[in-house]
Length: 377
Image 1 (cartoon, helix red, strand yellow):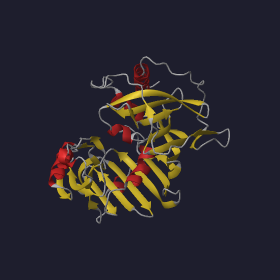
Image 2 (image 1 turned 135 degrees about the horizontal axis):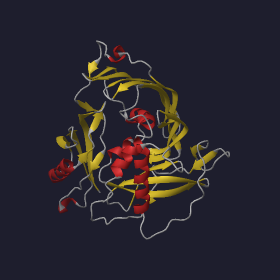
Image 3 (image 1 turned 30 degrees about the vertical axis):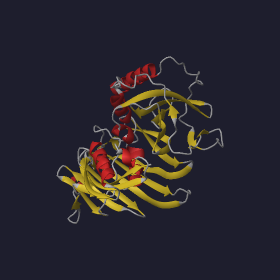
Image 4 (image 1 turned 90 degrees about the vertical axis):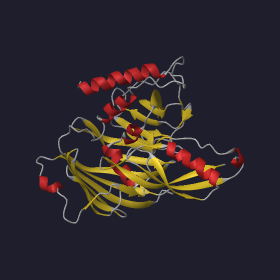
C-alpha cells in the first residue's frame, strides 16, 4: 500500500469514528465487488448489472447530518481539507507528479427537457503544471489554450469556458474540484444503500448547517474509487480504469432533477512518450489571457446577511449590483441599479462582507466583473 493510500485510510477512519455521536447506524449489507456494476440515476435498475440511484427533484440530495460538534465552536476536524486533497490525488489527473499525458473527451449537453442542445470534444496535452495545451471544439465554443511559464494565451473564442464547459473537464480530470473550494467545512460518514448494495460515502458541508445540501462522494467498498457524487447535480462514474495509479471514469453522466444534463465519454487516455516543446508554444495570433474577465460568477465562500432598515422590512425590494471580485475573492461595488437608497447601502455593505472563492483561469486567480442581486421579501 502506498504512503498516500495509508494516509487517506487513516483520515477516512478518523472521520468515520468521529462523525457520529450517540446514535448507531443500521447494519449495512455486506460489501461486495462493484467494479463491474453500472451506476445509473433511475427509479429502478433494468438489469442485474445496474445499480439504480433514485433521481432527486431539487438537485442535491438533502441529508440530515448527525452533528459531532457544537455549532458555536470552530470545527476541530481540520484534517478534512487534507483528506479531500488526498482523495483527489487518487481520482482524476490533478497531481503534479504525473508523467506527461494526453486525453480526449466527447460530450453532449441537454436542456431541462432532456433534449440535446450542444456537443463537442475536449482534448488536453499535459506536460507539467504550467505546460499544457487545451483544445475545445463544440457547437458553441471553440478555443485553444496555451499555458507556459511565460504566460497564458488563448486562440479562438475570447472568453472563459462556461460553467458546463468547465464541468465537462472537471468531472473527469478533477472530480473533487467543488470540494476543494469549500472553506470552514466538516465531514460526516454515510452508509448509503442503492439497489441493495452498500456504498461508503462522505458528506461535506459548510460548518453551522443542521440540514442542508452537502456535497456527497460515494466510493466502492474497501477503497477510494469514486462512483457517485452530488454537487452540481447527480453524477455517476462508470467504466473505471487505472491510469498511473489514479482512477479515471471513462463514462460520466450528470443528471439534474432526474433528467440528463451532461454525458461525457473518454475516447483516449495515454502517456506522452516524448514531450515536444514546440507543441506548447502559442502561435503568433494567440492573445494573452486577460487579468480581468466577465461572464462568469465565482462561488461564494462566505456569505453575509443584509441588515435592512426597519422601515423597509415589509417592502418588496430588488437591488442589482455590478461588482468586481478581486484575485483574493473580495468584492467592490462598481454600479448600483434600482431600489431606495437605504436598501442600496444595506446591500452594498453586505456585498463588501461577502467572500468569494478566487476565480482561476488556467490555474491563476483573476479579477471578475459580474452582477449581484440583493432581494428583500
